[in-house]
Amino acid sequence: MSREDRKIEVDFDDGETFTFTAEFLRVHSPSAEVMGHGPGQQVTVGGKRKVGFKNVEPVGNYAIRIAFDDGHDTGIFSWAYLHELGMNHERLWQAYEEALKTKRLSRDT
Image 1: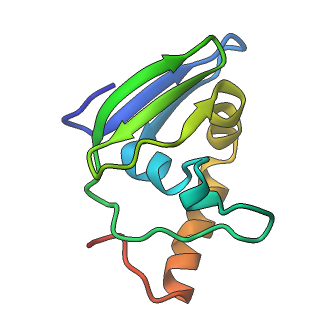
Image 2: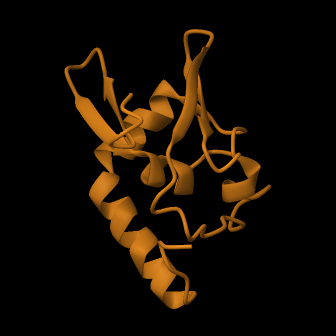
């Protein structure tokens, strides 16, 4: 994890390595705040361009909990979810930018 760059690199046993920005992980947090409480309730979170990491801690052997410097710390990122985010990064980022535009939101605060 690099607090200065606001990036984290995750290496997987299959040889894949993904680098995520704090902003990307924050807006794709698996928390109820972002995902909602059911299908179709996902929230587009804007204003997170400058968000950073406060802390990253393991949750057993299956996940990490990321605390962001904006106070958000309820998302538990499983290794499977992080792998999925990495494999679909470009598509997810494009969809996020389109959602911001549609909802007239900005990456800036």
